[in-house]
Length: 157
Image (cartoon, rainbow, N blue to C red; front, side, top):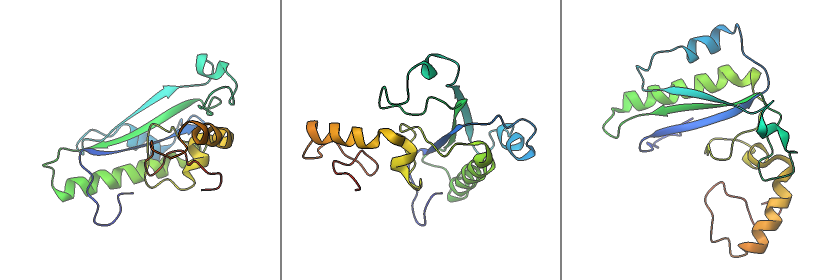
């Protein structure tokens, strides 16, 4: 998950929307109940059956209204942490992400930017991407507000 030779400052965060409750999974239970020896943490926010699920998926930029909850996997470290601690945090994050895969939808919350996320445009924006690209092209045609995983101004980019 971390990439060769890359040592981000402060940690890494990723997450997925969960479609099934992972009750009884020995892998998930081990990661979610692990102590914070690696300074790792996780959290969940409910989505379905509350006000988030009340709006249609295409009503706003946020398309992920049918998930049970959003799981956030955090692997923070101090800037003074050893390379071994950073590597252990990356391993914990990758293992947790893998353990949750059977329960996750493949969709991801766009505020948990994950540089390793394949097909990030679909994962973040779902069917809303084309409409968001049109809005971005109208209000930011020069693509001033951009970063590696921002909404592109052209379709198919």
